[in-house]
Image 1 (cartoon, rainbow, N blue to C red):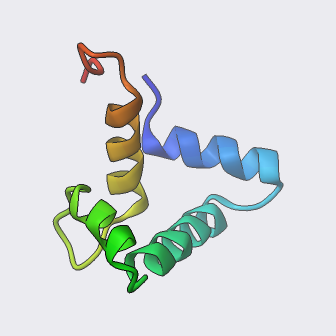
Image 2: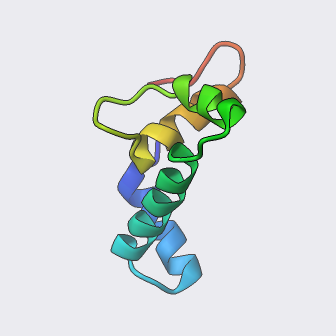
Length: 76
């Protein structure tokens, strides 16, 4: 099973950038969505579990992976 670091490295290689830049770009996209004032958008963010002040790339990737998993879920 791939780790988050593996995922970020793969994206960085494909995009010819650094892992740090990939992480920063993903976090910026999450922040933009999380700060959206549209009630429908805010309702979607309420479904995503996270522990800090806002979701991290890892939080969002995990949520999306579980949503896309077959009915029996992902092996963890």
